[in-house]
Figure (cartoon, rainbow, N blue to C red):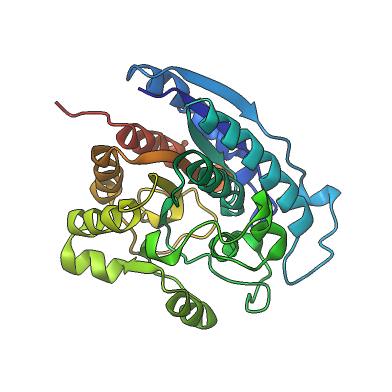
Length: 303
């Protein structure tokens, strides 16, 4: 069993609703580290990476707000997560907004490239596509851009982390649970040629079939799978503490099934849990759910 390195990233610059900087603390309050250790894993909590708050920074560019500061945090995360992977550990990254994935996925991609000479597979579990570019974004919020950066080449400040682009290939990239795309982003998702399973697909085919297909697409011919899980993929009834809730998301069992099938595959290399906003939550419900989902991803058994 690989050690698990917990890395908190209290990044609160990528969206327009404050509070996700408290997400890592909410996971720790839910007992995440202790509950992982109870499964038999060695757990090392690396603490939180430093991240500035909006009040101390200037936006500079309305098309990609706070991009330089976000890129600095992502660069530090890249270095920290890559070091964990090189030590044989699994980075568990706690957000913070989803723009942090530009750093965590870059680390997994570099590890796969240098140690296995293979690409990394990516499961992007999210209500949104996060494939906006500065030219098409209506808000300029960078948490809607990390997947675009990983596929390259924009926004360049994030795409350049690690010194090469793209970090992931469309053939090994799968979006699961999407149900809220801007009109321009719909075109961008189609043009990207990534694999997409919407909530409509899940309703028609069932979650198990969808995730098995996704794991095959992301896992075949790769060094493993990085899972980037945005808690807003879950229905707001079970995950109220997110900044951009969208009705009609994954229910409790569907969310666990995603993680259980990933665990059964044995391909998980690294994991992000992002966009928990305690200021919008009820009694830490969303972080509690996220903690349970992490345990499922790490192979917690019912029997």
